[in-house]
Length: 571
Image 1 (tube, rainbow, N blue to C red):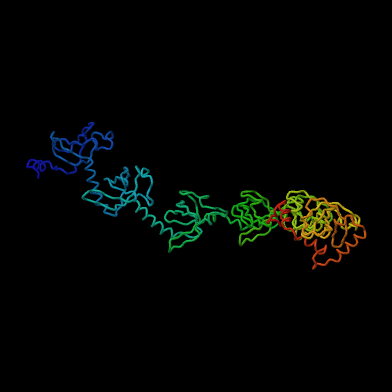
Image 2 (cartoon, rainbow, N blue to C red; image 1 turned 120 degrees about the horizontal axis):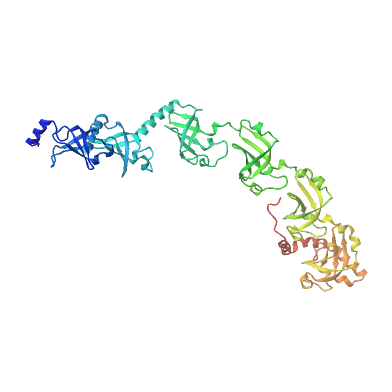
């Protein structure tokens, strides 16, 4: 309660503690400012309550709150800050109930948010600063914004603000306006808000629109980040609007003309173009002619002569190539290209360059079970069938006589231009020795040679002209021979007599035991051989030769191992 003296003073002078009065600055000291409020004694305000003490001047009028009418020194204790707080607090309560809007300046950072000066200090939680909680609160200090008052506690005299609610409210108003005003075909400014694998979300200043990756460029892009960055400002075309679901589809490439509109004029069929390889797939190569226009070179159109298994064998990404336009489908946005069409087809001149009967040289490129492929020139092969390797020997596999990389000479037998095939013969380089066999061997001739192969029915002996003769097991010795390997070995030199020549069947029969026979004895042995039949103990000479082909598979395997395994990818 007021003392009698204080109550008297208050009634005489009209002043009371807690009252806000106007005063005049009469003196400015380092730690305090003297203010005349019309009371019997001067009032004192702490210098710390002035934001800029140097700006204060004698004679300035200020509002102050009376804290005490007299202190120990008889001075009136005044507060400039409390006067301002009380005036602002009352003002805020009057004009700004919860949900009202007020302007304020961000003063400092505190735990959990910011302090905003709106006349009094108010708290702005970090979650209410913006739609997306900011990472750097310091960027807001010193700036002035509008805020929504979301909570007032009069007892504690604190206020909670939100800037986010105002932004959301403004965005909702702008969204509604945009959805009403926006039309397909409009060009709008926007900011890249987020990037995903399938596209980018664009902030149109009130509503987010989706810019799909397929609508970013007429050309090929693998990811939206190749064209856009978060925060980038761009102009986009409104493609579609769903006002019920508040969805907007946007386009970027639609600002430019569709390059396919005049495609037939720009790339007429038959013309030559240059392009960059942008993608290699098992069935061909995609070539970029210009941004948004790609053509396909099918694997079959890569080379006239090379059998390309996959495009990556001959092309590389980003390689610039020249190609010919084969066809255009503007509706499906497809262009067929050919690399081989820019060059002359070597098969058109193959008949003139390699006429049948001419001799050629080349390297063995590949071996298969049915023959050998000979490279005549880069990408142009001919094939020697296994039956055309030797006049005299039965070749089971070309690896028995040929090796990959070996140089060979052959004769062109036939050209199939339609199927792009050249048939070659190696044996045709030399004359068939069986045509003149009578000049080389006659019945009764005594010959010498080496044993080349053993079979259960006899032994083969190598003769001149690369011909083999057969010594039947019955013609090895006067004595009975149980097993041929008991008396003869491969590589052994033997002397024998020719006792049979079958030019039609290309067979020569030899007899070791007849080497010292007379002419009469030789005729007798020949008659015995002629009388043999397939079902008897000794097979006929003709059947002996045939059986030799199946007799020793291990020998054929050894012959194969000396060559190279056939290439399964060979044509």
